[in-house]
Image (cartoon, rainbow, N blue to C red; front, side, top):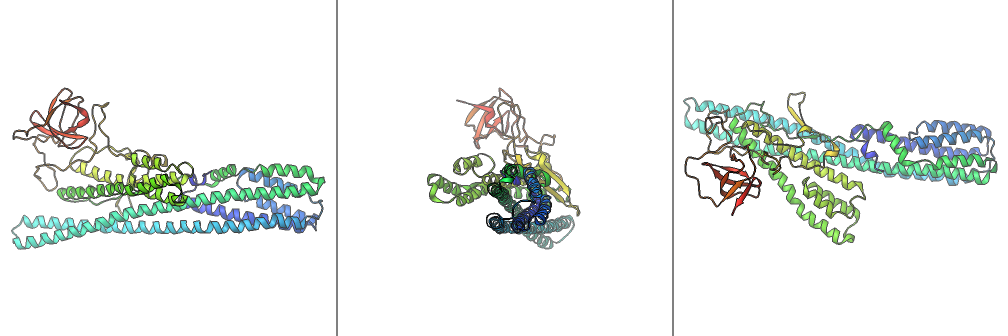
Length: 553
């Protein structure tokens, strides 16, 4: 089962599925009408039976599934051949065939309406959040341009004979404008996250709608099969002359296969599988085409990178409490019903990263994992949220690297990031990761690997140390010789705590990294963390991957 969720997505899929569900309801009403009419026409025989056969033909045009169409066509043939049958089945047909299908149809309509309304509500909320994000984006970009003009004007005042009092007053106004812009940027980021949450909420509502309608469609086909079977059994038991034809109809009605017919519906009218389009955060300073002082651009990028890293880290830490609750469900299965367990899984998945954290949660949630595809969908949503936040961070890191003439960091999802411009000329970036790739490893950066000779440092390029800008829109070269990857010191190197022998060559990718070759002996100054150490080689101090060296005793 669970085929609708793979074929009916986007607004078009929802409308197509709703239209088909209404057709199914109309079809059941037609079937009820046919059975009731058949009951009445048992008394009128030839003329009435001819009319009911025509109605059955019209109803067959609303079928899509192959097995249902075949069985229904067989019923039509049966009715056309049975115009000479006895007229004594009216009461039995009305009680055992027409009435059950009517009750069943009314119940299905009541079950379908709430989930249909939920999809419409979530779709409207998602649309409103998209509009709000566009509005905040426009306001942020406008305020950025105004602030840039003010800073440029201040720079011009400093270059001319202007009273210090006026310069200080104007600079204070610029700082105030900069603080105000920080609030706008935060609102823009919050709006971006809320838009993604709105999209995920809309997908959840549509997912539940697909699940509900597929279940109702399965029940509808079974009910139709049951009605046709009952209809055939009545004639088989009461009308021996028609026994052979009734057996044939019974075989065809029993052959109605809900999975096969649902698959036929998906192939025939389904618009296709889901392809998420996640709208990324397009900051003013991340687009190098926008005019801006280079030093302020770098400072703003650095600040937003820190905010984005804090947001990602916050979501990672938030899962700890939910993990404890999830473990409690494992230890005490009767502590909560299945829906409560699913809610905890959803909350836990929303704050998990896409790597080992999600695997840990999957391990803990064995009580329902694999039994209900809603868990798989929840993990996809959790991974999608982390992919969006990490892609935002990656965009900022790429902009920072480009400002400092550094190589861009590695990103396994870079091929799915598409940049375009809207009708107003503003940059619009979307992340289109195929559904089967959403739950892959979310690590955006390559990590040192001993099997490789070179590696990219996992992380973003740090700000330049001890550098003095030569120009407002140019980054300086520390040594003036074109080598931007070294940090050399004229004073004697500090005392070292140990020595290391280099096992693998490493080519620096950042200005504070150390060039090392296999066989070099490095004086170890500090172990900054488990991945990166600081040392001195040939009078040059820098950091290097800890996995590339062997510490000497």
